[in-house]
Length: 119
Image 1 (tube, rainbow, N blue to C red):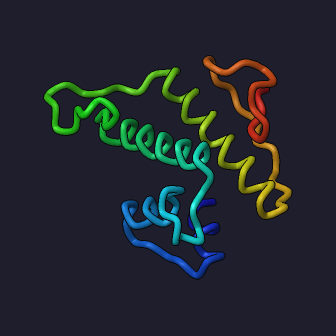
Image 2 (cartoon, rainbow, N blue to C red; image 1 turned 60 degrees about the vertical axis):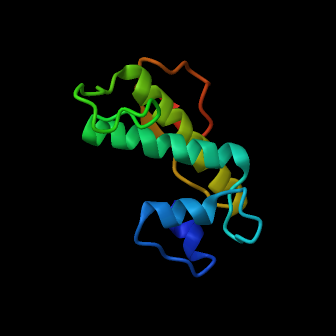
Image 3 (cartoon, rainbow, N blue to C red; image 1 turned 180 degrees about the vertical axis):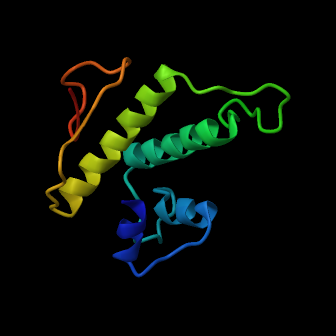
């Protein structure tokens, strides 16, 4: 979704850092910037993704720490909430009709999500 959003501005980035700068709402000159809440969701989703792949906790500055930062149900629930927020934003912004995705997650209550649905 984020790459498609950037592409609408003829932007394509090879690094996460460059994409993050293009989406940053604090950069007044950026035509592709996201609203504050959606940008925060994007950054949090990116950190949770790195945590699950590399067992690091960027939020607590534990990169390179001797102890692994495992991913639990609560982290999955947070990631799903952030993804749901971004899907809702892009669906509204671009007038998309995205298919509903059914899933199960112990940390999310029925009716809490807008785009992703629990079964």
